[in-house]
Image 1 (cartoon, rainbow, N blue to C red):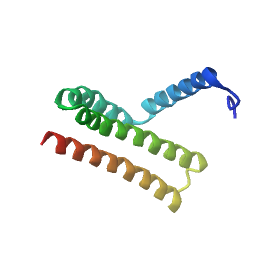
Image 2: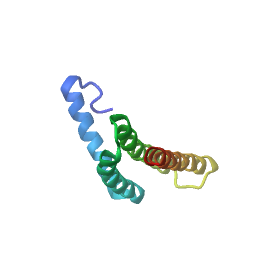
Image 3: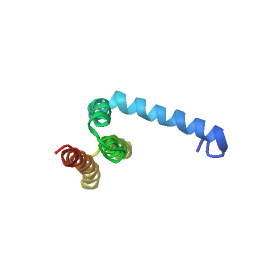
Image 4: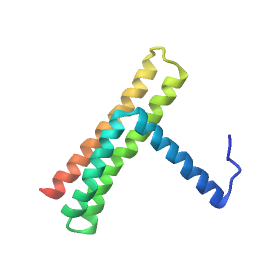
Length: 119
């Protein structure tokens, strides 16, 4: 694998550029990711404004950021499944469904955190 022998700042720089490519690809190809980025753009300033303590602000922001993290992981699962085969297979469908369930669970968590803190 290219870059596996990098050390120190070279490794960090390469990791940053690879991550940037991942964000760009996900932005281009995933509507759900774009919607969740909008949620983040609205949620971060709102969470900073509505949270009374540092812990509340961290929970409000963290719960929304977690949705984005889970979406990125779910997208990775979907890409790998599609890379293997476009043929319908029970296990492929199950893998995608489980990833989708993880995204839904993170959204529910974010909603619960926001409700508990704000109400």
